[in-house]
Length: 332
Image (cartoon, rainbow, N blue to C red; front, side, top):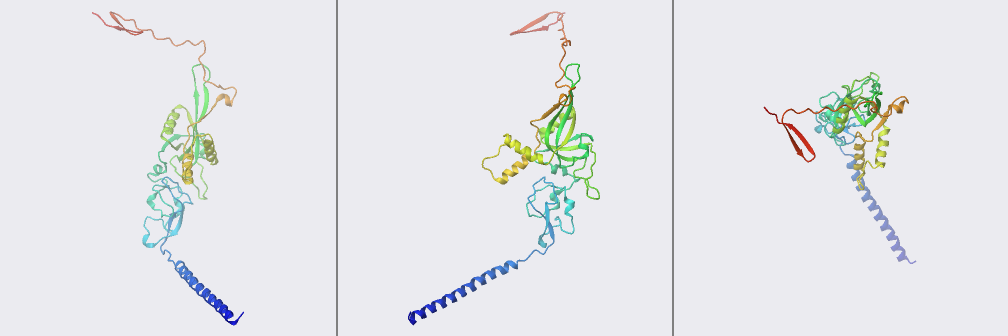
């Protein structure tokens, strides 16, 4: 290789190195310049306020996982916010959302209704639902182990006398399933002692959340026999929902947003059910009890029909097809 070609090659290598160093310095400087403002972004200097962790629609019952504290600009803090150090989030447990709150938005005092406040029960009711109260005893009320927020089945126990002289038919029927308890007596939340343990207390009245039609059925059932509560397991809701989907009782849209479909399933799972009721009669419990309603015996005489009154005086017979009506005219 001659000296001229060697010199050109060396100069090309030197220029390539200089270009690489210049490009690296240019791009590295820009990244540092862009990273500097991001690292130096001003943080809100105001107090920490309670914000919603997730969307809270109307009627949501507040739990310990619903809120968290987040620092908020001082000039945007309102007197209605729950401020750290001035309010306790634990005291909000059991409250009900009166106005919808979006995720990440501050929670105002007017958006919540605490147990015992005016309008709490109306805010706790779901859309289109009604509150109905029934009387229970220690035995029919699960010995006080039913608390607000639990879900129960409603059973009706009655005696059907029938038309004979035998003993009446004793029967129990589950008329409503998956119905939510709103209040026990006048308590809308669980009562705890000084150690934080739930206090079990016998109640005489239980308020339930029902649809208008189911509320009518409960009102009639109270006049027929005795109503009892059966506490449901939390796992029953999912199993029963899957069974209803498999049986075709619930139709899911072919093309639906997964989030909207999940919301629809949650709403369906929270609805009380008054179909496919189950019944148990006395013979299912003891061989000495009846399995049917007592029938009329052969020796029983049918009630005699009242004899028609014998008309006195002039009469008029009016024939309308095969029907003949006799009317008394009366004469002097």
